[in-house]
Amino acid sequence: MNRVAVIDYGMGNLHSVAKAIEHVGENLQLSVTADEKVIMAADRIVFPGVGAMRDCMGEIRRLGIDDMLRRLVEDRPILGICVGMQALLDHSEENNGVDCIGLFRGNVKRFPADMTDGNGDRLKVPHMGWNGVRQSQPHIMWKNIPDNSRFYFVHSYYVSPENANEVMGESTYPTPFTAALSRNNVFAVQFHPEKSQTVGLQLYKNFLEWDGNS
Image 1 (cartoon, helix red, strand yellow):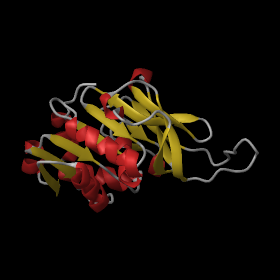
Image 2 (spheres, rainbow, N blue to C red):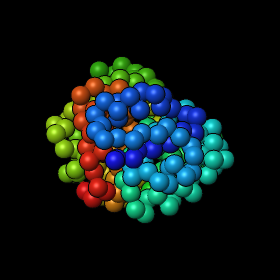
Image 3 (cartoon, rainbow, N blue to C red):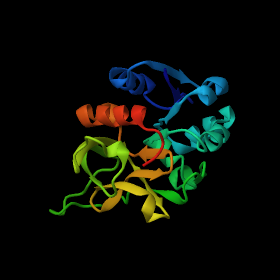
Image 4 (cartoon, helix red, strand yellow):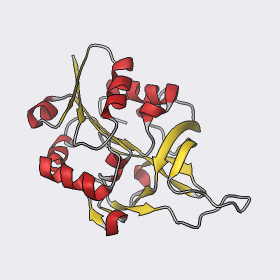
């Protein structure tokens, strides 16, 4: 039995995440929960999130999820998604500055308001829609996902990690930004796999099979 916990701290479209995982999973026990006993007993952890970082970190700390993740990171696969990815870094510029969990060194920054494309047309923030992801480094989580596959993004902020060796994928808007991070048994993505059709489902399938080694 593959026991998977999707962490529920009130921030994120958890139904879509759970349905996508159920679609690709076999012999699966899936829990959408904030219960510490259930989370700590799981074989794999999914850490999603949407919304304002201040609100997310407030709930994460209130529920003790930050401390759970610091223990979980020692011995089992973890998948961070969107704001869940951002929350793994040290600090976010959002909401006049918010300290985050700090599993990865680096900061979360806002896209500039005056960005333009190659034609000089202003680019909107948030960055919303389909965008290609270049696989910066090989990783088992990219199994059966072609390089430069298009994933679905919705975000106004992006991660800026200190260690370039932890960057597994990049996208562009209009300059390169980190779309996937990994170290040891943690893999995190800025895009939404559950909204990314075939390649997103493949990423979830890869996660269900991943033993935490790259």
